[in-house]
Length: 259
Image (cartoon, rainbow, N blue to C red; front, side, top):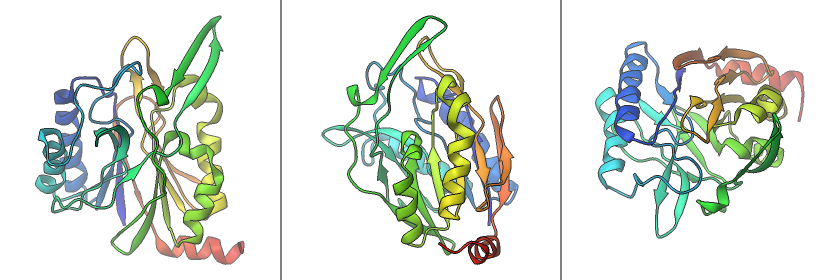
């Protein structure tokens, strides 16, 4: 299965983000990709002090904008999260098939909290100031592939990857907006570890760049194979990366190391 990952620098205003994602979806579809994976907060990126004003709700304008990308470009839209309103604000992974039908969603369980001193300045971020955490993992099936869904800070919880492996996942995805300090320190190591221990492909679409005065993200969207080999690294900048996922590779790795 050929898949695409889009790395972008989302801003608060959803309209430029929507235009860029629609172009990326068209390009990926034309290149033969079955699915396009998007990063965390792809639709609108706030500064972390309060939610975006462009909250997605079931069948509202923003929900339909996202659905239309999948439908019009005939591509699965997977893994990316949005600020979603359902009486509370949730960091929700929305998924659509290539006809625009909604697939199972996932609400981010592990909310990011950090207190980092860098260049003599203290930086504190706590997602609980905005979001209510989810309470259960979620798998979905596309094209005979079972995918375990995660978002950013979920990446640090190896038991989540192990659970998905035990439930038959072949792909794990972690849509992300990793900050620069934590990205430089841990991003590649954590993603390769999750792939190795779960013996799954790991797809990690990431935000990149300066989003506002408070948030700068690391980029380096990755596609990692079940042996921990990096198949594609988006580096810095906005770009599409691709990989061909092969079920035989998973079988090969799992036959070499029994878990």
